[in-house]
Image (cartoon, rainbow, N blue to C red; front, side, top):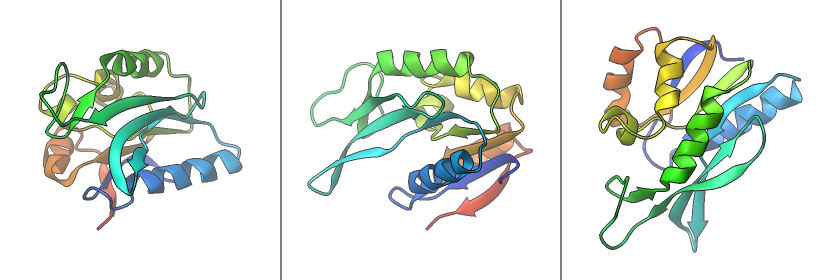
Length: 160
């Protein structure tokens, strides 16, 4: 099993979330307790149109973001408009996250690291080093920021 804080980084579509989903299945099959969240893409006709978020502790899944085409409102990035109620839901379950063997944070991105919004409970868990074993998915352009903020992390896998 991965130990410590592991940065998983790579471009869009490189397999970061698939890696997390496969690791999650392995952790569960070995009798370990996973925690945190994994954010699988939602595809229609081969195009990514949304991002879901899976609470790996409870198995509950909700739509986190949708691709927008007009003027976005609320919390958004270059391509995605986020559901602030779902962000609140994720922050609530992260704040009450029971002990786990491996914490998944898929992903911390520009909303958190550039805008100071979004899944801030995830950044708090990292800042406070509450969990010994964490998989953090991070985009390549944010990797230097993440490594500066959490210097104890290691780049375990760079998917290309």
